[in-house]
Image (cartoon, rainbow, N blue to C red; front, side):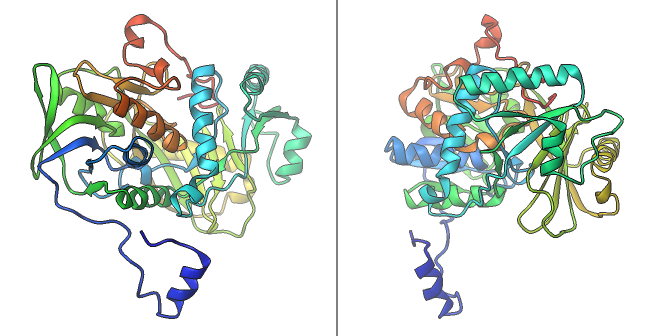
Length: 414
């Protein structure tokens, strides 16, 4: 793998940047692998990378039905944070945060992780009680968190309107949180995994999962059968479809989650601002676009557009909070397909089929967990048992009742 550095940049500038090598290969799939990872998004690529790097697994393939990083990895609002309420969720997201903080150096690829902070607004007395509770829980778990007064919010955001229909009474702030560039994350993991020998096979839809004597033996794809000793499903919104191919059901609902991006502006928004009560959140990208997140549509489905009432409600809320954005034009809108579990937490672990593991149910929290998710999933696949960080997120918790209820506890209602 060609190493990126200031010297390689200068050297290639002399040759008009015509000497850069291909970032990853496009190989034909082999007939058999040690591990097949279904899903070429951030989580799937991270799983393959850590399998090769940390566990020295030899033959690994990532199968993507479309193009690399073309699903939820490219359809989110790029927010990274770890200020969740419950111990199990906090530990997993904090591991991910720690990996984010060194990810560009680890991958030798700039993922543009910007720790500009995430602010969660409180609009009611109950919101403030919840903020105090969550900040205290974060600190007990070693996660940075603080409570802001209205005056402190105004000091950071002098143009915010605190006297909205739901007045802003305070906020929480995690300063280590921020945003990253979603496509750079996918490209960085793909490049690093490819350098370790991982085959990334695009346009290779999985159409069946073969089993013999209760164990997985491979997958049927649009490009033929591929044998595998172990298979990992890491396919976000379509996880239920793939689980059905393997003969079991998942307690998930798939919904479109909407987002919008504006025309570019000069730098003005120094942090990410989120509000549970009005269900909108906003940040500014490095090139100046306002990135606005909405809620999920109430209906289930796999459409990647969403509905206009959600867009209108979200923009109305943003304009009320930030009146100076009222004349900013939106450039485009999209929806990602999120798989929501009953307790708003992921499922990472073993399945009823031996050799088949699954990573799904992240809902709206998938992007921020990308490196940590891949790290624990790689351990689970390689060792055949969960890591301590994901042991609580097993599929059987929906039978035992040991749920980790993050609904509303993490300042996002969904």
